[in-house]
Structures are given as structure tokens and as C-alpha cells.
Length: 97
Image 1 (spheres, rainbow, N blue to C red):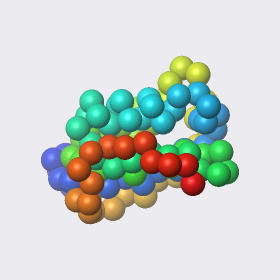
Image 2: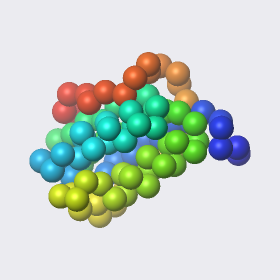
Image 3: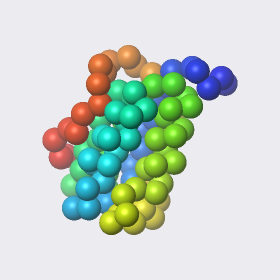
Image 4: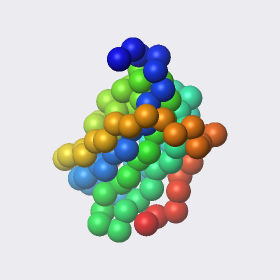
């Protein structure tokens, strides 16, 4: 797999990730990396991320997801890699589930 292929990452981030600016942190990182998709809070306290772009850029985002903003604590991330759908034109903060 080459670093310039277009991929989709679906991630469920667990830990202290709500109420600490995590979604805004993710949106800023995704915008900086020119990714498309969305981030939202889930009812169970996790944050869900769906990001599409070049594999290199998405892997950079994944490293940022693992770290989070300074006020967050990430304990686990469940990942799924898929082919990009091309359905998104920008990266948004979606309504909470």
C-alpha cells in the first residue's frame, strides 16, 4: 500500500475525551491535514471519527487522535480502515449521537 492512496479511517476513541475540546482538536488537525469527514461525541462517552484522505495524512491524524489535546486522556482507540467513499467535501463536527 502506498502512502498516497486515498483511505478512510473510522475510529472510536475511549477515555476522557468529552468536555475537553477533543472534537475541536480533531477538526483543527483534520483541516490542517486537508482531510474530509466528521467527528462527533457518542452517547457512551466515546468520540467517533471518520476521516478520509491520503494514507499518510490519515496516519498523521491517527497519531494526533492517540495524543489528543492536553486536557484529554485517551485510553483506547478501535480502528477500521476502509477504501475512501469520496462522500465528503470537508471535515465537520457532527451532532452528538
